[in-house]
Image: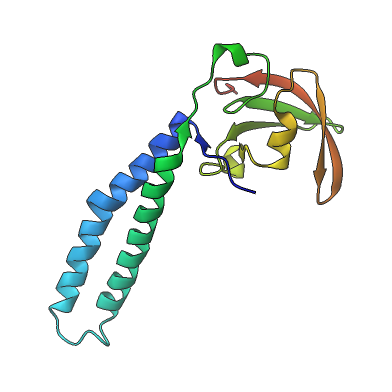
Length: 161
């Protein structure tokens, strides 16, 4: 399955900041360190030189990935017509049968972070939530079996605790 080419404005800003940091700060610093290490002579046993070259390859690979990925990503801003229903970018409060509540935000695959409550729009839970309203119930197939959730709240601005 192809991953969605959607991203929130916050996610875009984070990728843009990472790209800028890698290209403008990290890469020049590592390049200088490699140059300094190379000036010391024998490169075959020079750990700083070997590590620096490896780090440069990692930086270049990530810069290439970010540059290509950002070319195809589409920033999606919430629309007033979405209010009351779950779509991309929504914050959703769910409750399970045990009364446990969790809050999630539906985001692009490049910005999901479960610890922060951000789930990918491509995830089974997010797919089940799309288009639903408050008080709807959804059933999601998980490795531990089907789970039932109730939608308590939907917002397009972050929940305030």
